[in-house]
Length: 435
Image 1: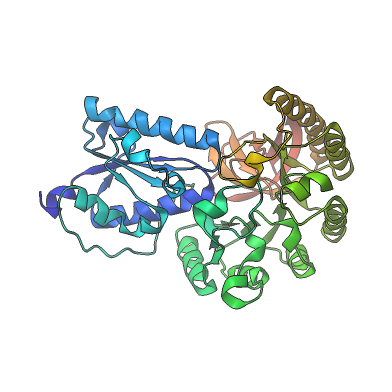
Image 2: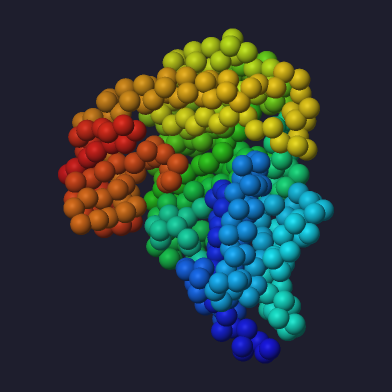
């Protein structure tokens, strides 16, 4: 087979996991298209399928395996010739992965993503010298995009596999991020969402000090960029300079995703987190005092080994005091290879669910009350979807795909920002009208 014949192959994708994984896939898609492959949305019509996997939790690994097996079935009933697995599951070093999934033609590690074109050609016994280009094809709507500002993590929380999957913390140079952001702005992106396992540590490995504020200021100079959103700010690293930048920079959304995981000092210590209850409360009071209209998103792990009813009550009281708008709850997942896997006093799955249900109801009532307070307010809202007689948008306190949304009672232009008055609420979401 020749390279010309290979370029006629159609490639389909299954992408799982987080938005950092999404960015990896977008870069692979760009290079595959640049080489000449056609992208196929229907797997039944693809000769090559790439499954980009997540492996953060056991449930994610199970989902990855299910998708791999499902795609492998197309080898018997459709055009599928080659099945390739990329992403995090390859980083866990399962010795039996190739034996248990013989249908897979190649397992490509994350560090080898840049070789994806050459790896595919090799499967067809063709030598290719394609040189990877640092560009991407957006899989989000054209008006917002994720920028991965670092890779890996140094925190080594006792429940987490990320440092073992993605390696140690490694920042992307500022000039590379600015180059990528300018390119995205030229394509119509208005909202940049900065993502990393910990954006607040940005630059410490490259420059010997944290440079997130410097990065934000450089990104703010890009005229076409209207909104900059920060995802995954670890509480231990949020300092006065960052708080002031969020408060005073009009392009930075008054929104912070701060993954606390818990607030009980006892549980935080066992999680190998550096915060405690008092330091978290002090930080949140400072943020709310200096940025009165701030929307904070956080996540909590329930049912961690040794968690007691008292720990749940501490978390309950924290929610009642700080009245956060966006909160996610997850049951603790016992992951082999983490320190907490061997901890005593593992919590029963039924009890985990009871705790999750209890606190979810508490948070629902808090959010419902906050939504009531929003009625009558006017926000700048960016439109994500538009239909015949209504549109779906977000204000600064709503990140795409994970937070609530605003329904607007007319068809508006996707990607444009409008003044929207909030007129009603429905469950978690809001309703509004264009002024």
